[in-house]
Image (cartoon, rainbow, N blue to C red; front, side, top):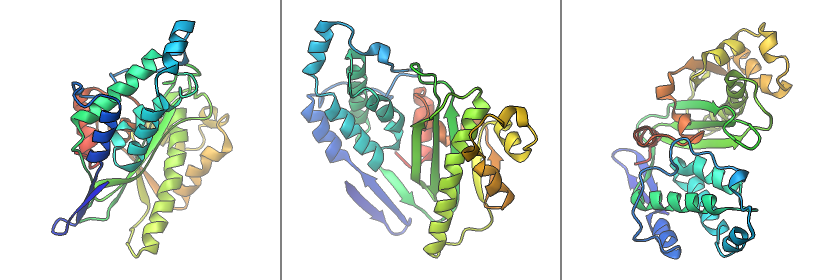
Length: 281
């Protein structure tokens, strides 16, 4: 990692250009044509793409699939939040990857080749805490489970984020977002306490931004029993945080939902915009 500090702007920028370059060279993609998105919009990788013939199985045994996928996971963990969804999707097929998965992994590498100079910028002149949470219902073709995600910004950059397949099938988008919000709420409270221990003042409740109005109504008005009585009790923890004044909910339009970047593959313009909004450019 290359770490650069701008003291006048009070920022730190982190990049992994050299690592990406070595990764492309390892897989003979240094001169490959870059692409503008990690995955094409609407891409849904599936076990249906796993090998179904002996010929393809033998072919895939010669492909070092786990090597680029592990490297992509490392990049997503370090500086490249923009490939988090793609890296998580590819990691699901490490036990039996097919040609489609292999080509998707190479596509992400080609995307990194065109954006290798991007840096993650942290800091800025404000310590304001901003939390965003989102879910994409039924996005996994194999088991129809949803992807829930959150990200937390302090100042100009993202310091905490997560994109994960949910443990059970959601019956509605509201339910999927409800469960994602619980994970975001827990992390928000921890982050607020952590900042206070560092001497950083966090005024009032932590504002958590969501783009599903049904989800917000369900949390603010717990009499909607028909919508929530079947949801596991752990996900109702958010209600208690709201009652205790630890967090507050805020509606934002889907166009302003930064966590959208972690739940699905997006069109190029939106992908680039959201990447910049989380401090990656």
